[in-house]
Amino acid sequence: MNEGLPATAKPISRLIQELNKLPGIGPKSAQRLAYYLLRAPKEQSALLADAILSVKQQITLCSTCFNVTDADPCLICRSEERDRSKICIVEQPQDILALEHTKVYKGLYHVLHGAISPTEGVGTGDIRIKELLERLKNSQVDEAILATNTNLEGEQTAMYLNRLIFPLGIKVTRLARGLPFGTELEYADDVTLTRALEERQEF
Ligand SMILES: [Zn+2]
Image 1 (cartoon, rainbow, N blue to C red):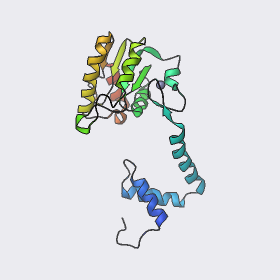
Image 2: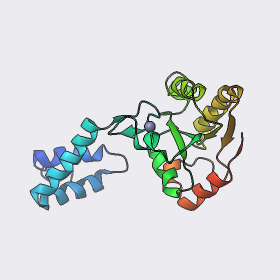
Image 3: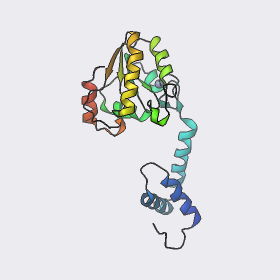
Image 4: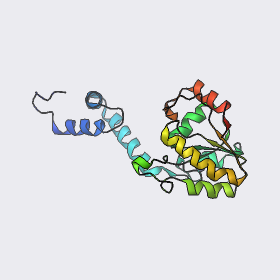
């Protein structure tokens, strides 16, 4: 960064600052993106700004599975082609993208929006567990696949869910250990995820 040089024009430093708040964007990348946008045609910035605003204005959560959607229920919950006897439970909406990308799984999903983490003060009532249990009680689901992350919080959440779901007479499975410990689903490659899905085991 050019700390020693005369200050950057205010609008530019403001853009750099905002870009720098995004995950994975360090000060150098923020600076590069800001100057790129400055040089690019005005329409490109307008499209980008509009896309960012629309996502906040038009996207809501599906009231059934809590995936992000612009129509409620979402496409997956609405689809006639999905296998309604299986439900895959994930931490975040982007995990669904990763699993759908493998094209192996044809069942339904449920997004918890987090994992139980006593250290971060996330309790069982802070994620969508109550909604999941309600949903399972009135469903044709015969298998619940626990696809939470393979880190400590994900494992704790899976164990807790297993205790609650098993008494409902639903088979509980967990993604196979093809996934290395500490992996976040959204970053896993297709081969690893496919194998983990195919070799999922009874919990
Ligand atoms: Zn849905």
